[in-house]
Amino acid sequence: MLSIRNLAKTYPGGVRALRDVSLEIPPGMFGLIGPNGAGKSTLMKILATLLEPDTGSATLDGLDLVANKDETRRLLGYLPQEFGVYPKMSAVDMLSHLAVMKGITKSGERKEIVEGLLQQTNLWDVRKKALGGYSGGMKQRFGIAQALLANPRLIIVDEPTAGLDPAERNRFLNLLSSIGRNVVVILSTHIVEDVRELCSRMAIISSGELLLEGVPVETIDALKGRVWRKVVGTEAEREAIEKAFPVISMHLVGGLQELRIYSEQSPGQGFAGAEADLEDVYFHHLTRHRPN
Image 1 (cartoon, one colour):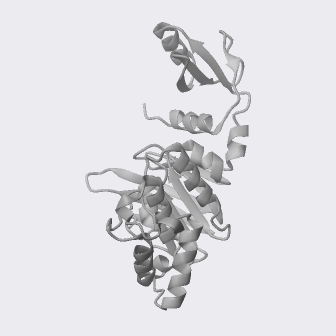
Image 2: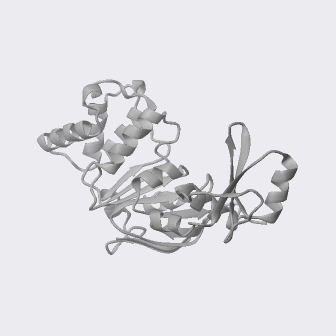
Image 3: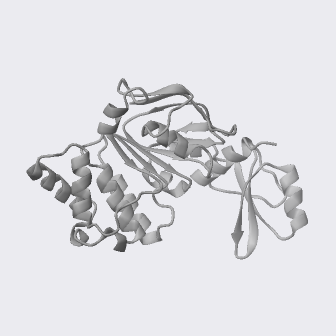
């Protein structure tokens, strides 16, 4: 169990990136979603020992991750948002080099581990290709391969599918879903679909604050019968609806604007009931906590 208690971080200049964040994260896939600048990467960097929090603590099965950085790094697998590689090195050589840095010094053991990870991440056939020639999805799969070195107990992946085409995104999500269930895996993203497809628990963070934590299906159930939709034809109609109801989101449908609103009862006025989804949960909580 990963226990995060009252973490706070303010950057020079007064930007409050984290505001007293507390979470209990069990083994398995955990989704952390929020808009850009929400504080997700700051939280991930603290857990990865790259940043010091101003206050608060983070422990994994009793180990203080903030105070014991060397031990934390030995049990950590980390795929940051910007993952750099040596472009002229092959995947097999780079992974072997990183394995040595992780303390896997016996050549036979290292060879077995590296080859197994390249097979697991479906990179075996391109293991001798220079990393600079990899596609975005291949680089992300290599990033997971290096994160899995030395059997980590905590795996952090930060915005892993941003910029991937649909086919590469599906391959990467399938790889993430195959990671063992006996470790804590944190998926930090602003893409709601990634969390819906992968995670058994999730949290929403915005402006450094924790807005919601729970089981995705249960958070959706809490909105059942409270989401309504309507296609609007004019700007005046849209503005009137925005004044009268909490608007969850707006989408283009056939070139027209469809508004989704939150209401405990039928709003009438031509609205139809909509089946709630995780995107509604996400935007509903963001709009409720939007600064005035």
